[in-house]
Image 1 (cartoon, helix red, strand yellow):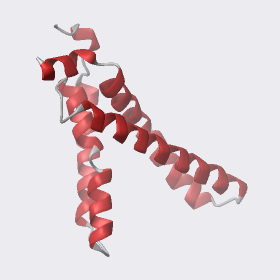
Image 2 (cartoon, helix red, strand yellow; image 1 turned 120 degrees about the vertical axis):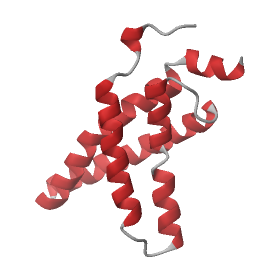
Image 3 (cartoon, one colour; image 1 turned 45 degrees about the vertical axis):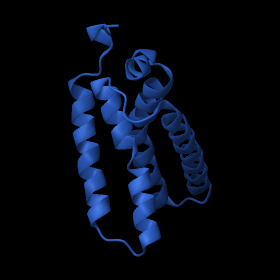
Image 4 (cartoon, helix red, strand yellow; image 1 turned 30 degrees about the vertical axis):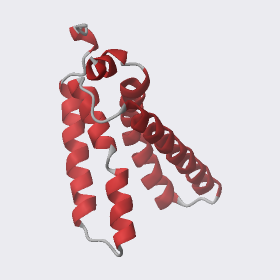
Length: 129
């Protein structure tokens, strides 16, 4: 099944992906205080593979993994919103600014992973064919 060209992610998604790769690389090379921290950061960076699969419209791994990973990311997003609200209540401006910027930058990731995992059956059919 051919996907309508208007539904394929375009240039802005590729630029966003490049920006996230650069940011993630900076996080990963900054150094780690423990092996557990490094494993955690690498696990959190897996969204890049899902984003790349969404942009290219190709399956990256197995769909059940992406369902679980999306749920994990959504739970992390809820925790972030909790801390965002707490920073407003406690008037912690620097914490609020960091969380707000991170939250705004993460919205397209959630959108892409949602579309990739739940709204792109043509991608996952191609894998099983």
